[in-house]
Image (tube, rainbow, N blue to C red; front, side, top):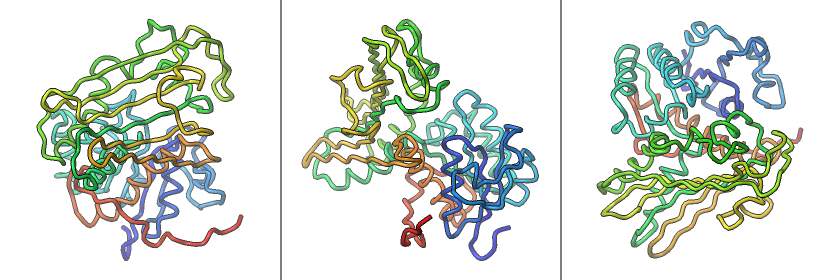
Length: 365
């Protein structure tokens, strides 16, 4: 497989996360893009540079032949969705691990914190590791580092800590994911529609692992995890450039919290505030002026610390920027994971990796 420290890396999936993964692997001096796995027949044979919006040909043709792609892979960036196909995603990931690959992925939420993951998820992964000698690191695209390693590091700058709050604030006006925005999140749906993403217990399933991870890092015991939910209707019909019309009276904004309760109080909080248009729920926290999204970490205490992260990619899009930073965390971890050997790892295990060998002058197109 990979020679002299170069890991042959396969990207599995070419959606929002997969595109960013192709670019990240291509840019990494210790990784070689060895393959791209696709499910859409129309993408088979297309060059990875085209699929990943790299701006040049990479000489790697996309394939639907999973066995062939995994046969020569040291590492796999699993970028296919696990939202509505969790069993298939788990089967794909364990297949890659049994083939001996180091796998990084955002697709299996409960494995953000493997120590609290249900046995039906954790046990197949551990069995695959024992059988094939691969490894797994799961971190989210919301982005994962914004809900685990960044707040944990920020607490180390404080003298006292009274609350940790991780925020995602996002405006979907220019986003191009109609199925997720309309049906998973519920934008444009009647107010009596229950969005699957915020149905009771689902937020805890998705973000509870990050709450538990922070609690474990800080050495505190959680009483429980609670959820809160607020929704607002659109006051007027609006048009979006990518997803079309959203009617007045339908859901226009969504706000929820996943709260880690310590001594009866919500001391570790992951909060999401999302809109389909900036005219809705203007009294809720807004993205920075001129932007469509931001991620924040707020440490209430002494001193009070607020960290605002605004990442952009693909023409200035902040959603793409958030995806790209999440992918960067995963892809940059591959070298550490391969040196660490077989295992199931989490954000407390895997240190944030500096951009070794990547600092370079911009090359004009």
